[in-house]
Image (tube, rainbow, N blue to C red):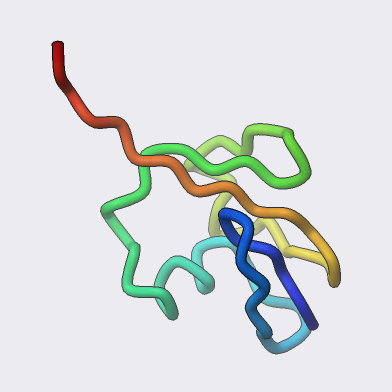
Length: 66
């Protein structure tokens, strides 16, 4: 299935969780927030949240500055 991650199309197996996508992309522990189709998914739900074909995933990391 195809997932759009931060504007780029990527292919994954069906029934993949948000956490598994982060592991595959080597982003586990680096992402602070995730939104699927413009809806925030809380971190404690990442392991159970299954994505669907065509979902738009935005992964965010907060950077300090001033």
